[in-house]
Every structure is written in structure tokens, then in C-alpha cells.
Amino acid sequence: EAGVAQSPRYKIIEKRQSVAFWCNPISGHATLYWYQQILGQGPKLLIQFQNNGVVDDSQLPKDRFSAERLKGVDSTLKIQPAKLEDSAVYLCASSIAPHSYYEQYFGPGTRLTVT
Amino acid sequence: AQKVTQAQTEISVVEKEDVTLDCVYETRDTTYYLFWYKQPPSGELVFLIRRNSFDEQNEISGRYSWNFQKSTSSFNFTITASQVVDSAVYFCALRGIIQGAQKLVFGQGTRLTINP
Image 1 (tube, each protein chain N blue to C red):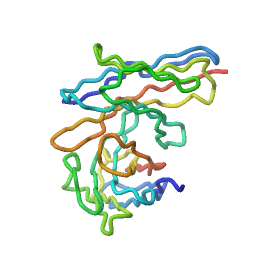
Image 2: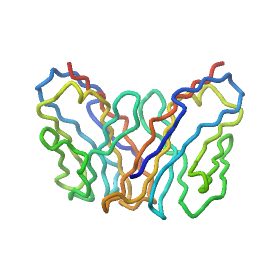
Image 3: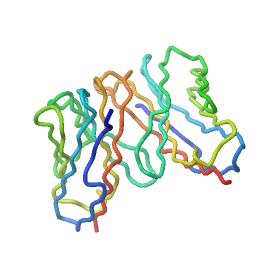
Image 4: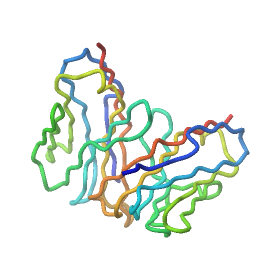
């Protein structure tokens, strides 16, 4: 079974530029998550999708971050414009369903460096 | 508020030693799940174990064991006879219900280094 795919793996941009990350979850997983992991910290949830609807985006900085999952499968996370403090690893995860019982499977992440 | 504390930032031991990673959590939920994940240098978080709040039985899986104690709000992880391949960052996480959604909250992580 293929795991969660993410691209690109690494991205370096200058502040005020825009960037987009892509995620393809495990086939059949209805729930998709985006996390931000700053160096030396645990991942923090940015947004959770159930199929193509948003379940929780309370920690997403909506003035600069946006995410979509149009067909309920792939998802993109965009930052526009980027700030220095956005430097982090962005992790995508998926699970069969949103209930807390189901473990989340994580992708390899995209390491973003903003200079 | 939900919170997970991993007080040990870094641990370094020699191969074959036993090592315990501590995890303390806070929640007002009566039903919740606790998890441990491993993050090797490749960056991908690997699921190790899930425990629900009603099951306080300890669990053993090979060289790994977990001790869940509700009375002290702790969910500690022990590696017996450690190996170099165990070197990674380990995260404890809690998933309950926050603001109607079931959010997974991670601790800060413990970086474990096993020296040959």
C-alpha cells in the first residue's frame, strides 16, 4: 500500500514570495491533515479536511495560508506572502476517518526555508 | 486545555542500555487517546502505539513497552536493550475533543541517541 506522498521535499524562497505544497493521501482515506512542525517542536495542526470539506482550520493563519481539497483526494497548501517565521516542515497526514481512534499516517514532509 | 509535556529534550545512552521516555498529559476529556510516534532522520512520523483512556493495561511489543497510569496522567515508553536504529525523535501525542473537533496534540519530542 502506497503511503502519503508529498512534494516538493524541499523549498527555499525569499520572504514575501508565495509557495504551494502538494499532498496525495493514502487511497481510501477520507480525512486529511496539514501540520506545521517548527524545528525542535512537535507538529501543530493547521487544517483538517473530511472529504472535501474543512473540519477544523482554527490554527490556520488565514491572512496568508490557504488550503483546498477540491475532489476529496489530493490537497494543496499555499502560503502567500511568506514570512521568515514560516520556515518549518509541513507535514501531510491522512486517516480512514476523523474519529480519534484512527491513527494518522504521515508523509515525509516538505521542508520550507524562507530567507 | 489539552497539553502534552515531554520533559526530556535529549537522551543519550550506550547501545544495549534500557531507556525510558517520559510523557505527562493534561485533558478534561473523559474519553481520549494517547499515541507515540517515532520520527527518524528521514522526517516521516511513524505510528508506534495507541492507547485509549479506559485501557490502563501496559503493553509490550518486542523491545518496546508502554506504561499508562491515569492516576499520574503519564504514558511512558521504555526501550529495552536499545539499538542504534532506535535513534530518532519520539513524540507523545493526545487526541481528545477540542472545540468540537478531535485535534491531535503533540509534545515537544525527545531526541534519543543510541551510541554504539
